[in-house]
Length: 114
Length: 142
Image (cartoon, rainbow over all chains, first blue to last red; front, top):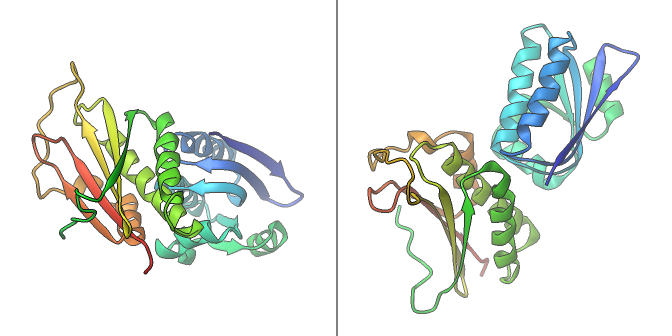
């Protein structure tokens, strides 16, 4: 069980963070570190792509919420890419759909973060 | 809330014990998924069970009662899957007084909200003899 984190710069101020694998109590610190490193470098607009994430639990949600709080302090945004019904359901029942922008593609999430 | 089924006389049981460490939570949730897949649960319901069990294990890891292991007991019958997640203090483990029985603060939050949302019945018990114990029931659709 692991999580892969791939950060891609774009020609805008937004960076794309592609996650692949499972985000749980064991792997979420790796995601937290990756997001923290970007924010520490002054990247405050993030698109986090969850398309290859098979599983996320409350610790994973907590990391995403923590990242959102930090970028918002600098006027930034976090938009998510997610079409997996089970993961979208978790955002639904926790009410996080109202906090994050959730989009079907990186293009749509990028357009929303401009 | 009373969490009673499955009845002892008809239940089949599977028990898994994992070290109280984050890297073992995936084993617990996959074990419960394997049990649920032997029943008539849908893929979505199995995913719900996996998440609820993982949340319970995560809570057990994040608690500070000195337990060394987490026990996951699955009891099945024709209509229910009852999962008990319990902290067990191992020999030589730190002896820390358990929290008051009515104290759900430690497991309250997003994880517990998810458990309560995804499972049909949930009961939390922090008795001094059993350590902490979370009992969850998922019913098969009739």
